[in-house]
Length: 264
Image (cartoon, rainbow, N blue to C red; front, side, top):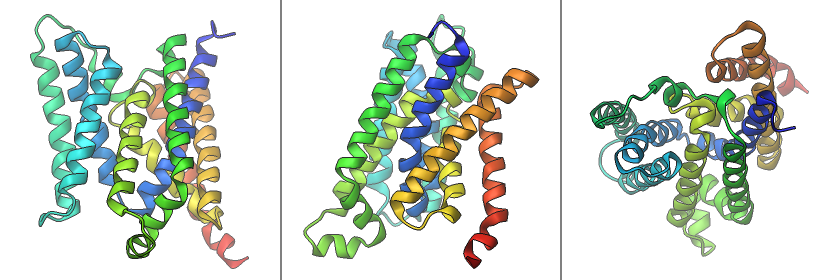
Protein backbone atom coordinates (compact mmCIF):
# COMPACT_ATOMS: atom_id res chain seq x y z
CA UNK A 1 0.00 0.00 0.00
CA UNK A 2 2.85 2.40 0.90
CA UNK A 3 4.20 2.13 -2.66
CA UNK A 4 1.60 4.74 -3.64
CA UNK A 5 3.25 8.16 -3.21
CA UNK A 6 -0.09 9.86 -2.58
CA UNK A 7 -0.87 7.52 0.33
CA UNK A 8 2.58 8.13 1.82
CA UNK A 9 2.02 11.89 1.43
CA UNK A 10 -1.41 11.68 3.08
CA UNK A 11 -0.04 9.66 6.00
CA UNK A 12 2.86 12.09 6.45
CA UNK A 13 0.53 15.09 6.36
CA UNK A 14 -1.89 13.48 8.80
CA UNK A 15 0.95 12.83 11.25
CA UNK A 16 2.04 16.45 11.11
CA UNK A 17 -1.55 17.71 11.47
CA UNK A 18 -2.16 15.59 14.59
CA UNK A 19 1.05 16.81 16.28
CA UNK A 20 0.70 20.44 15.21
CA UNK A 21 -2.96 20.84 16.26
CA UNK A 22 -2.67 20.77 20.08
CA UNK A 23 0.68 22.54 19.93
CA UNK A 24 -0.83 25.22 17.70
CA UNK A 25 -3.57 25.81 20.28
CA UNK A 26 -0.93 26.70 22.88
CA UNK A 27 0.82 28.95 20.33
CA UNK A 28 -2.50 30.78 19.75
CA UNK A 29 -3.42 30.99 23.45
CA UNK A 30 0.03 32.34 24.35
CA UNK A 31 0.05 34.72 21.32
CA UNK A 32 3.32 33.15 20.18
CA UNK A 33 2.88 33.30 16.39
CA UNK A 34 6.38 34.71 15.90
CA UNK A 35 7.72 32.00 18.22
CA UNK A 36 6.76 29.39 15.65
CA UNK A 37 8.26 31.50 12.87
CA UNK A 38 11.58 31.95 14.72
CA UNK A 39 11.93 28.22 15.39
CA UNK A 40 10.83 27.05 11.94
CA UNK A 41 12.91 29.59 10.00
CA UNK A 42 16.01 28.53 11.92
CA UNK A 43 15.48 25.04 10.48
CA UNK A 44 17.42 26.14 7.40
CA UNK A 45 20.48 26.61 9.61
CA UNK A 46 20.00 22.99 10.62
CA UNK A 47 19.96 21.97 6.96
CA UNK A 48 23.28 23.80 6.46
CA UNK A 49 24.72 22.14 9.58
CA UNK A 50 23.67 18.71 8.34
CA UNK A 51 25.14 19.27 4.87
CA UNK A 52 28.43 20.57 6.29
CA UNK A 53 28.88 17.71 8.78
CA UNK A 54 27.21 14.81 6.92
CA UNK A 55 24.64 14.50 9.68
CA UNK A 56 21.10 13.39 8.74
CA UNK A 57 19.05 16.49 7.88
CA UNK A 58 16.53 15.60 10.59
CA UNK A 59 19.29 15.60 13.25
CA UNK A 60 20.70 18.95 12.09
CA UNK A 61 17.27 20.57 12.00
CA UNK A 62 16.37 19.13 15.41
CA UNK A 63 19.58 20.47 17.00
CA UNK A 64 19.17 23.99 15.60
CA UNK A 65 15.42 24.12 16.27
CA UNK A 66 16.05 23.11 19.88
CA UNK A 67 18.80 25.73 20.23
CA UNK A 68 16.58 28.46 18.77
CA UNK A 69 13.66 27.42 20.98
CA UNK A 70 15.88 27.61 24.08
CA UNK A 71 17.29 31.01 23.02
CA UNK A 72 13.81 32.40 22.43
CA UNK A 73 12.58 31.00 25.73
CA UNK A 74 15.60 32.38 27.63
CA UNK A 75 15.37 35.87 26.13
CA UNK A 76 11.60 36.21 26.44
CA UNK A 77 11.81 37.92 29.82
CA UNK A 78 14.44 40.50 28.78
CA UNK A 79 13.80 44.18 28.29
CA UNK A 80 13.29 43.89 24.51
CA UNK A 81 9.61 43.50 23.69
CA UNK A 82 8.58 39.96 22.78
CA UNK A 83 7.24 40.94 19.34
CA UNK A 84 10.44 42.77 18.40
CA UNK A 85 12.71 40.02 19.73
CA UNK A 86 10.85 37.20 18.00
CA UNK A 87 10.57 39.20 14.76
CA UNK A 88 14.33 39.76 14.72
CA UNK A 89 15.10 36.12 15.47
CA UNK A 90 12.60 34.81 12.90
CA UNK A 91 13.95 36.81 10.00
CA UNK A 92 17.59 36.64 11.07
CA UNK A 93 17.31 32.85 11.40
CA UNK A 94 15.90 32.54 7.87
CA UNK A 95 18.54 34.85 6.37
CA UNK A 96 21.41 33.12 8.18
CA UNK A 97 20.11 29.75 7.03
CA UNK A 98 19.99 30.84 3.39
CA UNK A 99 23.52 32.29 3.61
CA UNK A 100 24.88 29.23 5.44
CA UNK A 101 23.43 26.78 2.89
CA UNK A 102 25.03 28.77 0.03
CA UNK A 103 28.42 28.59 1.77
CA UNK A 104 28.48 24.80 2.20
CA UNK A 105 31.20 23.65 -0.26
CA UNK A 106 30.45 21.03 -2.89
CA UNK A 107 26.69 21.03 -2.35
CA UNK A 108 24.03 21.78 -4.93
CA UNK A 109 20.89 22.23 -2.85
CA UNK A 110 17.32 22.66 -4.08
CA UNK A 111 16.24 25.22 -1.49
CA UNK A 112 12.60 25.18 -2.59
CA UNK A 113 12.25 21.67 -1.13
CA UNK A 114 13.33 23.00 2.28
CA UNK A 115 11.50 26.34 2.04
CA UNK A 116 8.14 25.01 0.81
CA UNK A 117 8.36 21.27 1.53
CA UNK A 118 8.24 18.24 -0.76
CA UNK A 119 5.52 16.06 0.71
CA UNK A 120 5.08 14.05 -2.51
CA UNK A 121 8.67 12.80 -2.17
CA UNK A 122 8.38 11.38 1.37
CA UNK A 123 9.70 7.83 1.71
CA UNK A 124 8.48 5.02 3.96
CA UNK A 125 11.28 5.98 6.37
CA UNK A 126 10.12 9.61 6.36
CA UNK A 127 6.57 8.51 7.20
CA UNK A 128 7.89 6.38 10.08
CA UNK A 129 10.00 9.30 11.39
CA UNK A 130 7.08 11.75 11.13
CA UNK A 131 4.69 9.41 12.98
CA UNK A 132 7.33 8.62 15.59
CA UNK A 133 7.91 12.33 16.21
CA UNK A 134 4.17 13.04 16.22
CA UNK A 135 3.59 10.26 18.76
CA UNK A 136 6.30 11.70 21.04
CA UNK A 137 4.76 15.18 20.84
CA UNK A 138 1.25 13.89 21.55
CA UNK A 139 2.40 11.76 24.52
CA UNK A 140 4.40 14.71 25.90
CA UNK A 141 1.43 17.08 25.62
CA UNK A 142 -1.05 14.56 27.05
CA UNK A 143 1.19 13.84 30.05
CA UNK A 144 1.62 17.58 30.79
CA UNK A 145 -1.75 18.84 29.50
CA UNK A 146 -3.25 20.20 32.73
CA UNK A 147 0.02 21.77 33.91
CA UNK A 148 0.60 23.35 30.49
CA UNK A 149 -2.95 24.65 30.38
CA UNK A 150 -2.79 26.21 33.85
CA UNK A 151 0.61 27.79 33.14
CA UNK A 152 -0.74 29.21 29.88
CA UNK A 153 -4.06 30.59 31.13
CA UNK A 154 -2.98 31.73 34.61
CA UNK A 155 0.77 31.62 35.43
CA UNK A 156 0.18 33.07 38.91
CA UNK A 157 -2.30 30.30 39.75
CA UNK A 158 0.15 27.72 38.39
CA UNK A 159 2.89 29.06 40.67
CA UNK A 160 0.58 29.24 43.69
CA UNK A 161 -0.46 25.62 43.20
CA UNK A 162 3.16 24.43 43.16
CA UNK A 163 3.69 24.43 39.40
CA UNK A 164 6.56 25.93 37.45
CA UNK A 165 5.43 28.01 34.44
CA UNK A 166 9.00 28.28 33.08
CA UNK A 167 9.36 24.48 33.12
CA UNK A 168 6.08 24.13 31.24
CA UNK A 169 7.25 26.71 28.69
CA UNK A 170 10.41 24.63 28.19
CA UNK A 171 8.27 21.52 27.60
CA UNK A 172 6.32 23.48 25.01
CA UNK A 173 9.48 24.69 23.25
CA UNK A 174 10.87 21.13 23.10
CA UNK A 175 7.63 19.86 21.56
CA UNK A 176 7.64 22.76 19.10
CA UNK A 177 11.24 22.04 18.04
CA UNK A 178 10.42 18.35 17.50
CA UNK A 179 7.34 19.23 15.43
CA UNK A 180 9.35 21.66 13.26
CA UNK A 181 12.01 19.02 12.65
CA UNK A 182 9.60 16.30 11.51
CA UNK A 183 7.36 18.69 9.52
CA UNK A 184 10.14 20.30 7.45
CA UNK A 185 9.69 17.90 4.53
CA UNK A 186 5.90 18.24 4.53
CA UNK A 187 5.32 22.00 4.31
CA UNK A 188 8.83 23.51 4.49
CA UNK A 189 10.48 26.05 6.78
CA UNK A 190 8.38 28.99 5.55
CA UNK A 191 5.02 27.29 6.06
CA UNK A 192 5.39 25.19 9.23
CA UNK A 193 4.19 28.05 11.42
CA UNK A 194 1.10 28.33 9.22
CA UNK A 195 0.16 24.71 9.97
CA UNK A 196 0.61 25.41 13.67
CA UNK A 197 -1.46 28.57 13.79
CA UNK A 198 -4.17 28.45 11.09
CA UNK A 199 -6.00 25.20 12.08
CA UNK A 200 -5.96 26.25 15.76
CA UNK A 201 -7.28 29.73 14.92
CA UNK A 202 -9.96 28.23 12.67
CA UNK A 203 -11.04 25.83 15.44
CA UNK A 204 -11.56 28.55 18.06
CA UNK A 205 -15.16 29.55 17.08
CA UNK A 206 -16.31 25.91 17.16
CA UNK A 207 -14.84 24.95 20.53
CA UNK A 208 -16.28 25.34 24.02
CA UNK A 209 -13.34 23.81 25.93
CA UNK A 210 -9.54 23.78 25.42
CA UNK A 211 -9.64 20.04 24.74
CA UNK A 212 -12.43 20.54 22.20
CA UNK A 213 -10.38 23.22 20.43
CA UNK A 214 -7.36 20.88 20.17
CA UNK A 215 -9.50 18.07 18.71
CA UNK A 216 -11.26 20.44 16.31
CA UNK A 217 -7.89 21.86 15.19
CA UNK A 218 -6.65 18.31 14.47
CA UNK A 219 -9.76 17.62 12.37
CA UNK A 220 -9.43 20.91 10.44
CA UNK A 221 -5.70 20.37 9.92
CA UNK A 222 -6.37 16.88 8.53
CA UNK A 223 -9.05 18.27 6.20
CA UNK A 224 -6.57 20.92 4.99
CA UNK A 225 -3.97 18.22 4.29
CA UNK A 226 -6.46 16.17 2.26
CA UNK A 227 -7.84 19.18 0.37
CA UNK A 228 -4.39 20.58 -0.36
CA UNK A 229 -3.10 17.23 -1.63
CA UNK A 230 -6.17 16.78 -3.83
CA UNK A 231 -5.90 20.29 -5.27
CA UNK A 232 -2.20 19.83 -5.95
CA UNK A 233 -2.86 16.51 -7.73
CA UNK A 234 -5.73 17.87 -9.83
CA UNK A 235 -4.39 21.33 -10.70
CA UNK A 236 -0.62 20.58 -10.56
CA UNK A 237 0.02 23.27 -7.96
CA UNK A 238 2.84 23.25 -5.34
CA UNK A 239 1.70 20.87 -2.62
CA UNK A 240 2.92 22.60 0.56
CA UNK A 241 1.46 26.01 -0.36
CA UNK A 242 -1.77 24.30 -1.55
CA UNK A 243 -2.18 22.74 1.91
CA UNK A 244 -1.73 26.13 3.58
CA UNK A 245 -4.21 27.75 1.16
CA UNK A 246 -6.76 25.06 2.07
CA UNK A 247 -6.17 25.76 5.76
CA UNK A 248 -6.59 29.51 5.15
CA UNK A 249 -9.88 28.81 3.34
CA UNK A 250 -11.11 26.85 6.38
CA UNK A 251 -10.10 29.77 8.61
CA UNK A 252 -12.09 32.19 6.42
CA UNK A 253 -15.15 29.92 6.64
CA UNK A 254 -14.92 29.59 10.42
CA UNK A 255 -14.46 33.35 10.80
CA UNK A 256 -17.54 33.97 8.64
CA UNK A 257 -19.54 31.46 10.69
CA UNK A 258 -18.33 32.81 14.02
CA UNK A 259 -21.19 35.34 14.60
CA UNK A 260 -23.78 32.60 13.96
CA UNK A 261 -22.03 30.23 16.37
CA UNK A 262 -21.86 32.90 19.09
CA UNK A 263 -25.60 33.64 18.82
CA UNK A 264 -26.56 30.02 19.64
